[in-house]
Length: 551
Image (tube, rainbow, N blue to C red; front, side, top):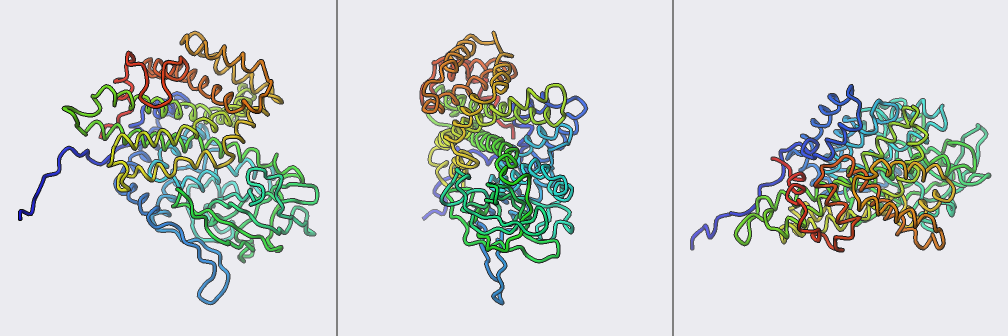
C-alpha cells in the first residue's frame, strides 16, 4: 500500500508572524487620532513591538500552553502548613511579565496613558485573554488607592511598575505588585449590599480584621485585594494584602478554584477570612461603594476592550482563512455571500474598537484635568455602562459566526477558535451582567443630567453626516422623552444608545464605506438579525479588505 495517499492542498497558512497592532487599521488609526503629536511616534514604536511579539509563534504557543495546563491550587506544603498558593504554568508568567513590562498596568497620570494602555491591552489579550484579568484589576485599583493617600504612596508605584515579580513578599520588598478584587458573595452576586463579611475595627485607626467569605476572588495570587465588607457604619472598602509588612502571611484561605467555561488560564477562587484577616480601610466607613466606583468603571471599560480584542482576533482569523481557502471555483473571500458575512463581522469589530478607544481618550482628558475634564467625566459615567452592555453582548455571536467561516476546521481545538468562543461570554458577566449595566444607564439618566448632555453632544458632533444616523438620533430622543416603564425598556434603550454612539463615531472617523455599511445595517433597518444580511449594493469588498491582515 502506498505510504502517501494524498497531498495537503487548499489549507490556509497559520496566522502567525505578523504585527497585531499595525495590522489592525482601526486600532492604529485610533491611537493616532487620540494622541498628541509629541506622543505618537513613541507610542507607535511601543505598540508595534508588542504587536509583533503578540503575533509571533512563540507568544501564541504560550497562550495555548497557559490554557492547556491551567492553574492548580496548593492549600498546604509538604509538612502540613497552610500556604494557599496557586501554581501556574511558566507560560502564564511569561505572558504576564511581557504585558506588565509593556506598561499595561500603567495609565494613570502618564501622558496619553489610557489610550496607550488600552491599545496595548487590546493587542496583548489577543494572544491569551485570561492574563488580562490581573492586568485589568491592577490598573483599575489605582483610583481606589488614591482615596487613601498613605496607601497610594506605598501601593500605587508598585501597581504601576513595569516589573513583574511573582514571589509573595511584603510590598516594600517588591519592584512591582498586582492587585485583585474580592467583592461578591454567594448569597448576593451583583447585589454587593447583601454582603455578610464583617469588618471589626482594631485599636489602630483604619485597621480591621475580617470574618466571612467571597464567592469570586479573581487572580488569588495577587499581592493585595480590594474587598467589600460590612463595618459598624455599613459597607466599606478595604485593602487586604497577602503578605503583611513583617513578612508573615495574612489569613487568606483559598477554598477551591472555579471550574470555568473559559478563561481557564486564569485562576478564580472562593476565599475565606477567619476573623484574623488584617485589612486597611479605604475611604469612610459605610461609603464602600463610592470608594470602589472608580475601580469598577475602569474594569468595565476593560470588559469593552477585552471583547473588542476577542472580536478582532476572531475576525482576523476568519478573513485570513477565507483569503486562502478556495471552494466552488474560487477563493472564499471573493464569494458575494461570504464577503457579506465577513464585512458584517468586520463592522462589529471596528465599531467596538473605535468606541473603546474613544472612552480611553476620555479617561486621558479627565486625568489631564483640562477644560474638557468635567464633560468627559460625565460622558464616561453614561457611555461606559452603555458600551459595556452592548459590546460585550455582541462578542459571542461575532466569535461564533467567525468560527463558522472556518467550517469544520474552526470547530477543532487546534484552530484556536473554540478557545475564543469559550472566552466570549465572560466580559458580559464580569463586573455586572447585562441587566446591571442597563439599569445603571437608567440610574444615570434619572440623576445625572450632565451625563446625558455629554452623550448628546458627542453624538451631535456627527450631525448631518448620515441621514440614517440623524433619524436614529431623533428616535432615541423621542424614547428618552418618555420614561414610562423605563426599567423594563432599559436593555432596549442601552442598545439604541450604543448603536447611535458607534454610528456617530464611525461617521466622523471611519472610511466612508465602513460608516455607510454600519449605518445601513444597524441604524437604517436595512439588515437582518443574522450576520451576512447587509445590502448587496454597499462596498463590502473594501470593508473586508480593511479587516484583512497582511502576513
